[in-house]
Image 1 (cartoon, one colour):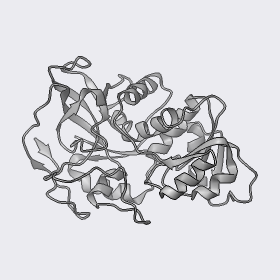
Image 2 (cartoon, rainbow, N blue to C red):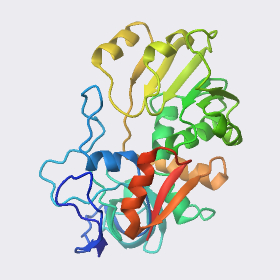
Image 3 (tube, rainbow, N blue to C red):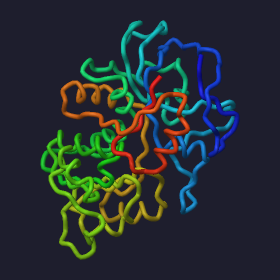
Image 4 (cartoon, rainbow, N blue to C red):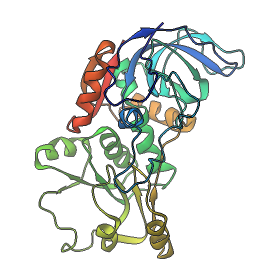
Length: 322
């Protein structure tokens, strides 16, 4: 099969295609013929052995000990071509999508992927493989923050930074679908589009002053990308508010300080989750959320897709097709 295989981590790796054997599947797995791959910052940060500016190792980064050669990637949409003996959820020929073995190595930068059945859902018939591949890590991250780490309820005031990005554009739609009042922090250029996603209020981060403004009475803040320090949000918390940082870990002292004051301030990672991917399939099927795919690249242009993602300016998701 075709695959992008890395002998070592190298930020300048050309990410060219080579060939290897089609993987065998375990009893609880299915074999997927890949149609589309969603790519994420975790992919290039793993490639670069990323450490945060404050010296914290990115806690979501998959462990690499003993893994060589490495095939990156977690997000896939495709067709089931073989089914393990213990699998009852899928049959050969089913169209599926999901985030595979996160945290860990899904090994999806290939045209065949072995995947645990519980990491997958059936692709809704009303969306493309490209749209399905987009609605994996980013959508699961949004869903877990809104429904697992915090239980969003009608009337909650939810603030979301980077609402035009991969995680953010799903988070806005999901929060709105849950009945929340959504406040989005973005640029003037993205404001109209973010309103179309469902945001009730727009804050222009170039002009809004969090320190001088009156309290926003926020129940939940999703800081996607680590735009602001926790101290800047504190005056805007409603009692018992939650503030989740999505890109990387927080110093333990910061977490302990806010938790001692009754606030849930912490880093939240993402994990492969059957309940989440099944819920996302339902939201996509009903039209309550939609994937926005900003750029599409063919498999032999993975390096260009990485370079585009690193710019940080793409609306929605970047997807690679096979």
